[in-house]
Length: 276
Image 1: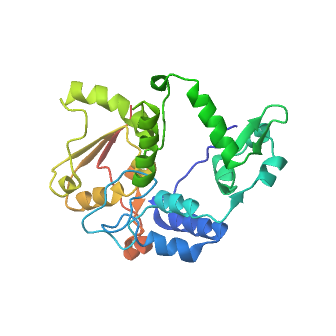
Image 2 (image 1 turned 60 degrees about the vertical axis):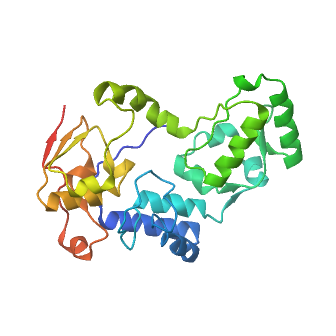
Image 3 (image 1 turned 135 degrees about the vertical axis):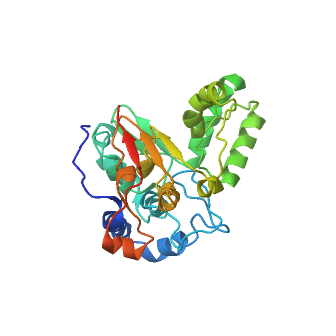
């Protein structure tokens, strides 16, 4: 599928973000339930955002979520369903041409699905048939040759049950998607700073004297970080960016949490950007 690149001159956040989120509310048709759930997102007694791993602040905003995080939650709450009838209409080759957004908009699966190479379609099977097939295949392997892969954003309860299944089967091969993000840092960080994980905490943003960015697209990967960066800039902290790309969020940002800023205009985050 060919990627669609378009020039974007507006600031990160701002009215563009609000309008995009409003469209997502309208498309998924669950504005009441989604609004109630979002009130608890990233709050101390609420739940963590399913979009990124940015921390829950001690003093959260009223709307403690970004556009990406709100959309991820709304998608989780969607009332749309991808039924067997949907897959009867669309071959896998056809679906391979759809965009990620269009595939997401098809809704949640209602049945276990098995790929049929003859028709090039996913075909629904009963749960017991799916479990029997999985069990038959697992019994044919050495347990330590099997990997039980899961999402790093799965719920605690789901992850607990899943790892029990793996251990009862006879293995502790339990990687998750976070491994893909952190395998490189677990090798590179010990060589550079002596430890395999980051050494800062959220409160450090309130006390630092300078911030250096290396190859981080904060506007896409962790937009809520822009709030803390903006607060740092307001108290005079220089933020220097090293990146081969122009990161829109670091160049200009309109904070939707501040009504006056939404009216008066955007602010620059990086004091200096070095593009190489």
